[in-house]
Image (cartoon, rainbow, N blue to C red; front, top):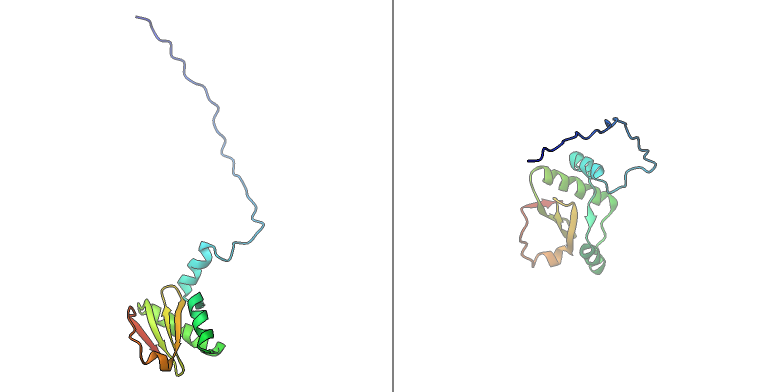
Length: 127
């Protein structure tokens, strides 16, 4: 039988060099860190879905900035209570809002809302 001749492979040790990278651009507005901070602080703004924007325009529903702030505050409060989808009733309008996603799903005037059956909501906010 032939005898094998083993030779260990000699390699140079890899030096631990720190690679420094420069961040010339700040983190984008849709970065994970930003979303994480918003989720922690609960101060996310409500977003109108395309459908909700269309319904507000079609039904000539106007909501003031001050009213939006109140709606946002109440939706954040509802979210802290575990509400995921809510019906927001106002004097002149009704909104379906996903508290989980901070998104207004649809909007209707109060007269139209009186003839509707609302499903898949687990909370109501009356303003």
